[in-house]
Length: 189
Image (cartoon, rainbow, N blue to C red; front, side, top):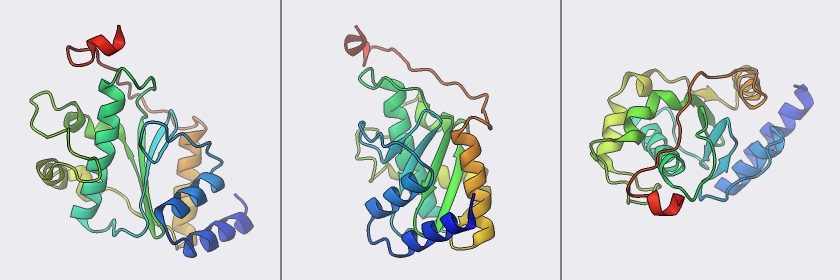
């Protein structure tokens, strides 16, 4: 990764004014083809991205709410017959200041929600408060690494990690298949 292109990315992020600007900067820097077709920010078979403009990822409640939002999208991919995509092994949250990469497998118990504990009919941007609280109470949420994008060394670590995921140098053993059940049976057939 050339220092010149990193500096250009950091300059672009610094002048971003909207969530869309942030998404564009990340997509361009990491050469990600847009796929927003299923009402989520950006999808690749390996990574589901959720972009924000300026959230405080260091705040446990804030990052838990954003993780919860992504779990709505993961759940939609898993249970909707209308979405024919594999469930990505990684989730990336990013804004103008920080970024997080987490494995989807760490959150499987939440988006599977076999006991219907959470209200999945809510808008993903306003996730179930119990889901947010339960995520906040996990050790994963407490221990998650938050990359500081404005620090060159931190951004470089984040970028190298993300590139390895996007290019399949890091492969997760996580496989979660779509579910066919009574709710989506007719859509499938």
